[in-house]
Figure (cartoon, rainbow, N blue to C red):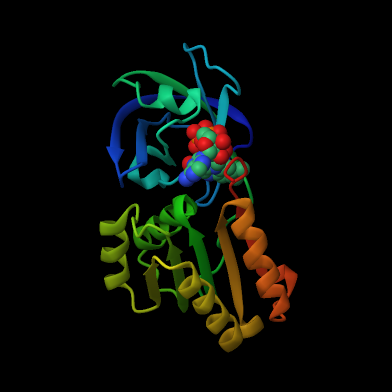
Length: 232
Ligand SMILES: Cc1cc2nc3c(=O)[nH]c(=O)nc-3n(C[C@H](O)[C@H](O)[C@H](O)COP(=O)(O)OP(=O)(O)OC[C@H]3O[C@@H](n4cnc5c(N)ncnc54)[C@H](O)[C@@H]3O)c2cc1C
């Protein structure tokens, strides 16, 4: 079981540009830091004065078997001071993380599952798929609807690769909100309560999709949400 709310030191290794404004931050990890795919942590700098809130919650986008901690975030043109400082990280710099926290996890790939990820909401989904791939689990049916309005998809190469490998996995890259909405409708009408529904994205998107699913008769207990508070 992953440890709860313990502070760990992370050693910064490198930054990877995923899309025009999405960046991944890679850290080496201490042996005793453990987490379940889908969980998140509270990240802090150790030696920088941050204007405003001096911590941020990010999902753990990697799995322990990768031997690294990865979080990924969108950094807009005029970002918060915290995110400005992320861009100045140098190899060997230390951050800390409190974690692991959260109940957004997949217990059973023998169930039909529909994941709906909006933009940066894909971060915990990467961890799910890395986990599935590391254990070579072919899911019963794992539908991933990954929507980004600008058609820029983080982790695209990995997602396409893993999608090819497993017949039970079906990842769709969607760049039109109406199509995203339509696909959700179609899936929920077809599978109804024979599926679980995972939603990851902004509070607005989560609320919208949850309402839609409830309206289509999906049981509340079958809907799991990871709400990225802090995004509008
Ligand atoms: C459980 C959980 C998991 C999370 N996981 C992640 C994760 O993996 N990755 C991640 O990035 N965040 C994640 N978040 C959200 C994260 O904690 C921050 O709240 C979020 O990244 C916003 O960061 P910021 O406050 O530094 O603002 P910034 O992103 O720097 O934004 C600065 C300001 O610009 C606004 N803004 C941002 N984008 C736009 C835009 N496109 N157009 C107009 N205005 C904009 C913001 O609302 C804000 O007011 C998670 C939150 C929770 C609760």
